[in-house]
Amino acid sequence: MNALSTPPIHRVGVVGSGIMGIGIAELCAKAGLDVTVAVSSTASLVEGPKRLARSLDRGVSKGKVTPELRDAAFGRVAFTRELTDLADRQFVVEAVKEHEPLKLELFAALDKIVEDPDAILASNTSSIPIVRLARATTRPHQVVGVHFFNPVPALPLVELIPSVLTDHQTTERAQEFVTSALGKTAVVSPDRAGFLVNALLFPYLLSAIRMVEAGVATAEVIDQGMVLGCSHPMGPLKLADLIGLDTTVSIAEAMYQEFREPLYAPPPMLLRMVEGGLLGRKSGQGFYTYE
Ligand SMILES: NC(=O)c1ccc[n+]([C@@H]2O[C@H](COP(=O)([O-])OP(=O)(O)OC[C@H]3O[C@@H](n4cnc5c(N)ncnc54)[C@H](O)[C@@H]3O)[C@@H](O)[C@H]2O)c1
Image (cartoon, rainbow, N blue to C red; front, side, top):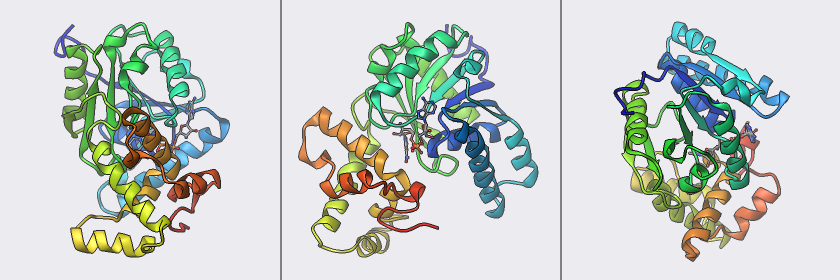
């Protein structure tokens, strides 16, 4: 098999309807692809389409999406509670919680369900080694990390992470898909916790949280400093809220476990906030309060 001898990817499966799952579904649907999103609860079957509609509407109000494209894209996305509905997909990307046992179980299940022998099984994980997910399947050479950035419709980068077991054709086909079909820029990143971007970003985010914890300055002042002094589009505390503080903890823990360096350790303040249900923008409260 090579990337050119396999048919173009039209049928995409997404597992998870959180921040990233909905973003990836929206991106693929706007690119004209047929998308099925597998969710884990009845509540998500109701909430998922609402979140997708809200995000598409935001695109319309910003003038980035026409009402016609919004309607067409919405119509291309089906939601299901049955993972088996992903059987005919050519490219499946999981975007469930950053929890290794959950992802391992999911990859083992997808391996049994997805029928196309050329299908790519991808993970949007931020920090879990791809090789471990690959080993949960009988086709480790077709498992690859495809790491989108938040918000998916807006940010141009995708990290592609082949594991030591991924074959060249899979990486090439995934790269062709995210660049030509989805219009993103791809960088190939190493299969180490945090890949490239988060390995650099997280020590910075965690340092900012430690500054708040130590009472050095408030979240607002730190964020203002980085926005006005360094031209960052948003400050580190607002960004942590956007990522989700639970996801921030999971990524930090995975990196700490891999490198054993204190700069990756989640600060106690962050852990307590997550234990208290303060998850950032998605829960309405983090370092900031959201409507
Ligand atoms: N948030 C970010 O900025 C960001 C950026 C890049 C990558 N990621 C990665 O993307 C993945 C998802 O993150 P998120 O921010 O969307 O998290 P989220 O908390 O917004 O959503 C996770 C979703 O997974 C669902 N889920 C849990 N178990 C499931 C199952 N068995 N089947 C189907 N759905 C299930 C939950 O219901 C929830 O909707 C994580 O691996 C994360 O590391 C996140």
